[in-house]
Length: 125
Image (cartoon, rainbow, N blue to C red; front, side, top):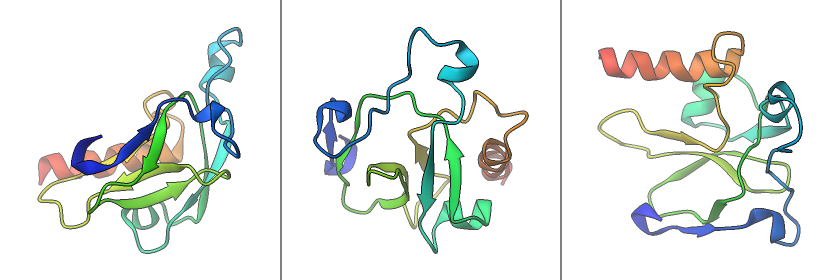
C-alpha cells in the first residue's frame, strides 16, 4: 500500500470483521444502498465537513486497510473497527480517501454532496 501501510485482501475472511461486500444478486439500489454506519473521528476533515459523529454509507469492498500508513489519519471506522476513511493532515492539496462509493447517490445523499463540495472547493482554490 502507498506510504507504507498494509492491505487486508479479504476482509470478510478476517475474524471479527463484517462482510463488506455487496450482494451481487440484489438490485443495484440495494447493492449501493446504505449498508452500515461509520463513526467519524473527532477533529478530522470528515468531522469538519459533515458536522456529524456517525453517518450511513454503502459497502461494496472486499479489501481494507490492515495497518494504516504513517502520516495518514483514520477519519472513520465501520462498526467492526475497519478503517473506512483516511486523510493526510498537512497535505498541500485535498486528500480524502473513503471505502464507500459517494458517487452512487451524489445528488441526493448529504454525505456525498459534502464530500464532493469540499473537493470542488479545493480544486477551485
